[in-house]
Length: 144
Image (cartoon, rainbow, N blue to C red; front, side, top):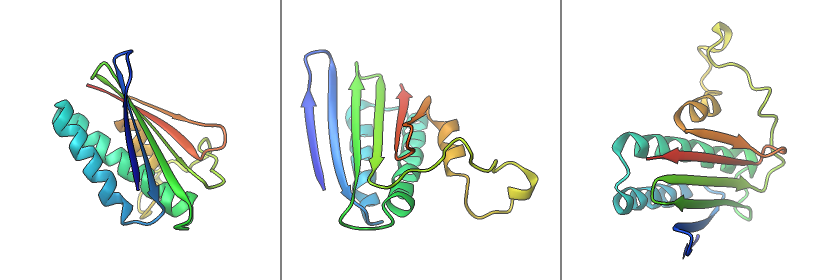
């Protein structure tokens, strides 16, 4: 795992993390978010949303994107602007997916499915959710 922090003169801070594609990397991610929470006085509700969304996206990147190939990485960039706007970019080395054609998890036929709710949840918990064209990178915004 690699972590870097850069303080910019424009009142923003940048962090970068590179996580190996193994489920144990989630502990590193959670520790990083816990530290952000403590250092930036993030309200509990935003912290909970951030933790839920990042966990979901990184687990999807590890399992579905990189197919748990430990030679591949999940890249997380965070820009904190003015201590109030947290912009995460999460990318994997997979082929991506068609995020526009996901089954609706609230449809009656899908209610009992054990999976398929993650992106739906992320879109509702983050303030903004933007995919790249390929579907192997997502940008999540949280405002405090």
